[in-house]
Length: 152
Image (cartoon, rainbow, N blue to C red; front, side, top):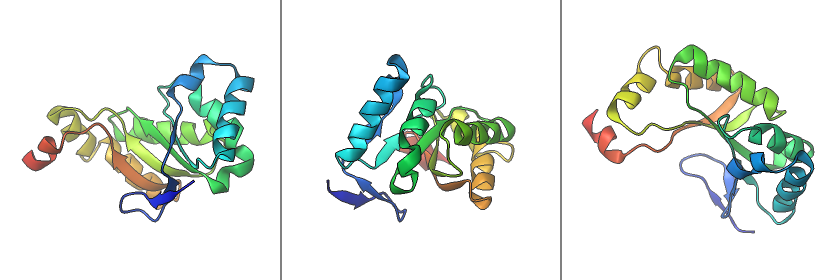
């Protein structure tokens, strides 16, 4: 499968990614088969979130043996530094990995939420701390309207 550079990162990701929201609705055995089959077909970009039920656990179990060949992205919906950092540490455990390739701030969909996430005690600080500790490679805001960025 074709791969492309992801944004301004050095990550090479498959042109088709695997979103894990729905795997919380199937058994661990089925989820493992589906995720592993996606990998066999050439998909190397796997996206999940703490808010997606047990998706992180299932994805981590399925990808454990091929972790270094995958790009794993997850999200935090927390807005404070301490909560977001705790989310990152918990996601690492659920995903059975020592690092996240991408951590996304989930649901930044209005000006107030953005301001809170970007504040000195906000979730972006936790992501930057995790990156400095090599727990996270890349950071991203998700669901943000470009109009909010222009107003900052």
